Structure formats: structure tokens, C-alpha cells
Image 1 (tube, rainbow, N blue to C red):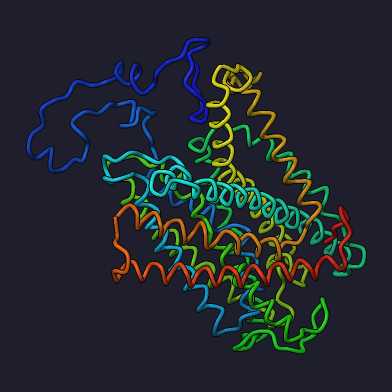
Image 2: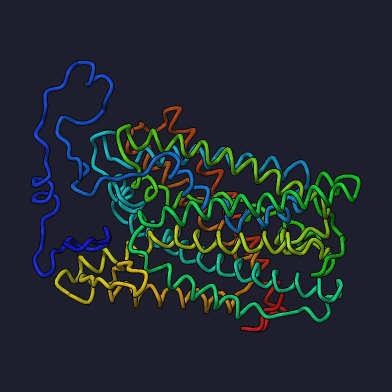
Length: 515
């Protein structure tokens, strides 16, 4: 039997295997009487299999550590690079405060969402494999379609944002070497980012052929290590710059009205838009709820998956918040209100030590290669599951071929539908990235439009339905107040980010982005 992806229906060549019954029955282990001590120390159900979980699928192997690496890979992404700019708009008082509030909201709603992985009982209830499955199970109706449109649209947008960020970092490596060669004179070091977007796109086409989410765990761990690498470099450079300045720059309320920036003089209206866009940037930096259920579906049990996920969430959010505060505050303290760059690691004015900046930007690129896959695998799985159900007898969609790579001897599984559609997906995100290379504005828009519905509204509503919380009780009112408050923040951030895009379009030429 050929190994297969979870996204495709089970097949043995041309015959169909009912995996949930026949295969599971084949490997079923005869129930053994257990002592009272064994029953107390284990949550394993009386009927279990060494090869399959309770839903008939292959045993999940994820732990708190692998789940944490997935979360850190997803959270500490390109969003960390814009946090110094966000704090520069809000100032020393509001900036760190808003960041901590976002961390609390994300942690709380993520815990609510993790309780919705199983419908009913947290140990024996029916599993929900995706975010949409959870919405369908708990809420149903038109909300499922609305959730799907928002979630997968947001994942598509994240792929665009990561492509832009990776191209900027690749161009930054080239530019730092150019500045080093020209002894800091940057007039000859302007370059297009289009070529780097295409290089990133080709790389993602190759990695996108990894069949499913379970098989990208190693890429996720590598990406998590890279995220700590460039965050540490950015933090170190910020500390060094603060030491050179002999103090922290910045102001309590952020950039002042009348300040002169590269985009012109800051007007009262622009100050408001900048503050709102900063909220969107911070929201994007913390956003990972859209793939939380998919991450939780990789965790083994016992113990119950929601318990492991809550521990992974606490660990991950605590680590990322500490890094965010350090990187954002040190970046702002190093550059001040006006000079803080939109992308921290591409904004340092010095060109020595250029190799350190090269290492940091290379780490960003490697991280984004993995983060792109962590975010896109749920979208890939959705399209492939839907297609396999729509055309179950179509060999083009369901059949997998096994090829052996010469010399290496590694066996590779290929599916023609997966190969073609994922390639088209990556090409489309690359082309759109070349059309809209606005890093800060794209990040702000994604954070604004994805934060409230996916991170707050649906988790809150699903939790209320799951726990059968009655209307107008204290807990119900508290959850609704939280949801309404986050809606106001999201709408405000969306307005600020759209205003930023409109300003950028004044001096914009398609396919002619430079760095």
C-alpha cells in the first residue's frame, strides 16, 4: 500500500479501503483487563490501537514542543519587523501597553478555540480537523461559508505578505554588501525586488509539494530557530544603537504632528491613520488562530489535546511577547519617532558589521520559507479534500505516484492535481506581491481584517455554543463585550491601513518596486 496524504481519500492502487473500519479492525488490539492503578494513571480508552487514533486515522505524534514550534513559526514572522515602527506611532506609553493587551486577548481566545477541537467531550468527542470544521460543528449555517471565505482569504493574503517580506530581506543582503563595497555610499545600491520575489516563489513551489501539515514539522522547527536568530540580531543591533546614542530616543505619545518624514510632513489626519495602522501591524504580528485547530490536530493523546494545546499556547505567547517587547522597544529606542524604519532589519543606516545584517536577513528568508508552508498547508488541504469529495473517482485528483530520486534513493510521492494547483497558487501570490509591494500596509490590512472575525468572534461564539452559556449571564456579557471591543479596534485598524495604501499609490508604478 502506498503511503498517502491525509488530504486525499484512502486508496490501494485501484481498490478503495474503508480506513475507519477495515484498516482499524485489522490492527485492533484485543482489550485487556487493567488494574485499578493502570486505570488511574492512564487516560487511554479501553479500546485502542497502536497504529490508529479513535477516528481511524494514523496515530498523531505531536507534543507540546512541536505545537509550540508551529505556533512560534507562525507568530514570530514578518510581523516582528514592523513592531518598532508601530511603537513609534503610538509612543512609549501606548505602544507596549497595546502589545500586552493584544497578547492577553490572543492567549484567552486561543484557549477558547482549543476547547472546540472536539465537539462535546474533550476526550471522546468528535474531532474537528480544521477551523471550518469546528465552526460547522458548533455554529453551522451560513457562518461556515463566511468563516471559510475570511480564513482562506486571509491565508492567501499572508502568503503575499511573506513573499514581500522575504524579497525585501533578500534585497537587503545585496544592498548591505553593496554599501560595504562602496563604503556607505548608497546612490549606486538601489535595486528591484521583483527578481527576489520570483526566487522565493520558485522555492515555495518546491516545498509546497510536501503532502500535508504533519510532514512539515521539521521545516517548522528550522523556521522557529531562524525566527529567534533574526529577532536576537535585531535586538542586539537595537541595543548597540541605543548604547551609541547614549540613551533611548522617542517620546511618550509617538511621532508628533508636524514631524518631517520621507513621505512628507505628518498632518493631524495622518497621525490618526498612522496610529490606527499601528494597531493593525500589532494584530498581524500576533495572529495565528486561523491555523490553531490544524496545529492541534497534530497532537497525540492522552492527555486530552486541549490541555496540551493550552500549555503550548501559554509557552509560545509568553516567549513571543517578550521578544516582541524587546525588539519593538529597542528598535524604537534606537531610531526615535521619525527615523524608525517600517522593516527593522532593513533600516539600520550603518553598513558594518554588514555580515551580521546578512545573517539576520538570511534567517528571515529561511523562516519565511517555513512560515509560508505552515500557513498555506490548511488552505491546500481544504481545496484537495473538497476536490476529492467532488470527484472521488478522478485519477488525476486522487491517484498518487511514487518516484525515486536518483543517487539519493529518496522516494517522493507525487499527485498531479496537487502539483499543478499548488504551483498555480504560489505563482499567483508571487505576481500579486510584485503588483503590491507595500510591506507595512499589507501587514496592517491583513491584521485588521483577520483579527476580529477569526481570532475573537468565531472562537467566542463557538465557545458559547459548546459550553451552552445562557444569554445575559455574567460570562456571556463579558465575552460579548470583549468581542465588540475587538471589532471596534479591527475596524479602526482597517481604516488606517487602507489610508496608508492610498498614500502609497500616489508614487506607485506596477512591477517597479525598488529597495
